[in-house]
Length: 43
Image (cartoon, rainbow, N blue to C red; front, side, top):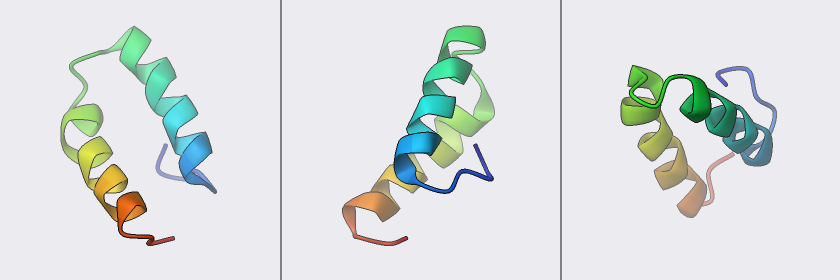
């Protein structure tokens, strides 16, 4: 996820991880932050 080149790729990795480890810290902490940046138009 950390090396994703786009938000779409990031979301795909997040979906895969969510199926394997739904309580993963990266999904709880980083995922919301990444979507906040996306909404603000940050690359």
